Each structure stands twice: as structure tokens, then as C-alpha cells.
Length: 134
Image 1 (cartoon, rainbow, N blue to C red):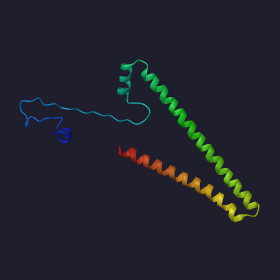
Image 2 (tube, rainbow, N blue to C red):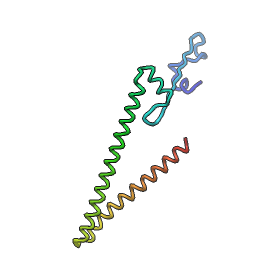
Image 3 (cartoon, helix red, strand yellow):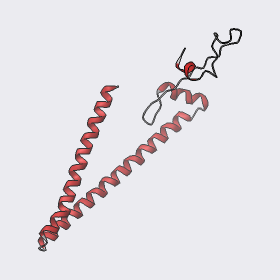
Image 4 (cartoon, rainbow, N blue to C red):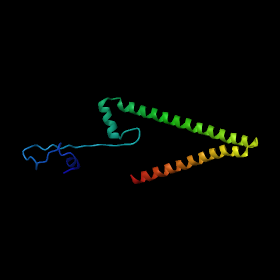
């Protein structure tokens, strides 16, 4: 018996229970891909539904990539501005005689940059491991 037959005895009758009945088999197929575009054989199937579907899917993927890149750039630029404000503000506080209070924003900015750097290294390492396991 297949996994489906074991899990769903009500849907699929075996010949042993009722020899005169027909046996119904259920075949389940699934596919999974990652990324904005499906595999070529699936992509070609969209053309059979409507001729311009592949072109529309490509345009959608390009718009999505442009959107993602723009927001990543905005996030990086914002982080740069915040980091610079913290560092300059810390130095100004130190110059004004508030040494202990001035060190805090500098340490915060540098600590944030270092943690982001190590998080990115960890993510690249995990991605590399995942790609080798496939």
C-alpha cells in the first residue's frame, strides 16, 4: 500500500476488502521552486494558457527585483545616516566635556555595525551550507 492508501482508507478501497469493486488510485504530484521564475517546463506551460503570460511574468519579476533593490538601498542609506549622526554626536558630546555620555552613542553605532557585519557573514555561511546540502 502507498502512503496515501495507508492514510486515507475511506478514499481508496483495496481489492482485499471488496473484490468486486473498482480500485481508485490517487496520484499526487507537487513541485517547488525558489526564486521569481518557475522552471522552463512550467514557464512554457503558461504560454499554452495565454500567449503573453511568460512575458508578463518576466516583467513582474523585474519590477519585484527593482523594488527590492530600491528598498535595500534606502535601508542602507538610512543606517549610514543614523550611524554618522551617532558618531558625530558622540564626538561633539566628548568635546563639550561629557566624556562618558559621548562614548555611549559611539559604542552603540560601532556595535551595531559590527553586529550587522557578523549577521551577514553568518547568513552567507548558512546559505553556503544549505546550497551544499542540496
